[in-house]
Amino acid sequence: MTTHDASQALDPSDYVAQHLQHFSTASSASASAVSGQHVGVVVWNPYALLLAAAVFAVLMAVAARRDRGAVFSLGRDTGFARRLYVWWSCAWRQGLASTLLFIVAAVAFHFLMPRTAVPLMKFSHELVTSERARNSPMLSLMIAAMPVLVAIGIYFVVSLPLAGYMVRNGFDAHAFPGPERFGFRHAVLLGLTTYVWSVPASLVLADFAVTLPDHAADVLRAIFVVAWGMYIVLPRQVRRVGRLATA
Image (cartoon, rainbow, N blue to C red; front, side):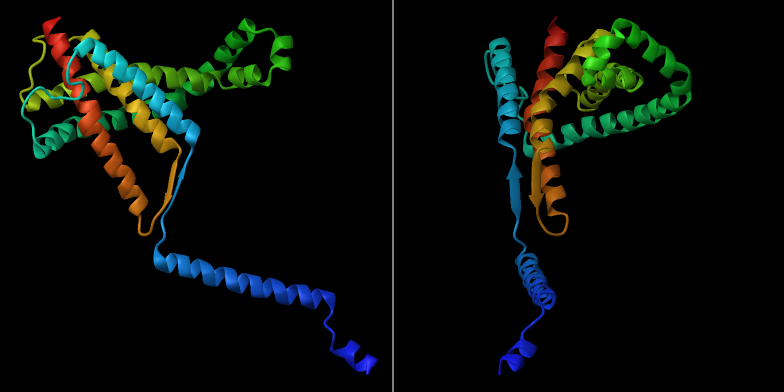
């Protein structure tokens, strides 16, 4: 009897294999059930949200102190369709200009990198002693990445006035009032306004993860970007142009 029971008993490896197979089958069944129900899961980073809220609160305080009125008003009777049209006129110009600038910057970086990488690294190495660089991995990383950091800085500096000019062209297409002569300083200030008021939305989207079927997450992000641009960034751009016209 004992011999018969022993022959019927499973080998430990077979026992583990059977349970693993059962677990994988149950997991796949539950996963298919979840996907069949199209459950959406949203994951937020509380620290990113707090940082975005803090930046937005500071911007709101500064804007309220300057404008002493409706911070996000366009100053005219503008409905949803016209607001969307004006935003799109500015957005596609900025997108096209940014794409062309990125292509030019990528080509320039490809050809200038071999010539400028060594001088930049030598210059940064002279600013920081070798002993201090060895004791600080972050400084060593910054020295190694100095060519890339310089390229990013140049790209950002050039993109500021470019964004300002594109936004101003979009406003001109809709007969928005502005300064008679829109100079380089005006373009830099308008580009800075555009980027600064886009920071809170960027912080939110950077740590926003959502699981939805059929690219619904991308659609949700796009709706958030458009709404933020229409009702937050666009009014601040109009206010900036109005102040430049009266300055």
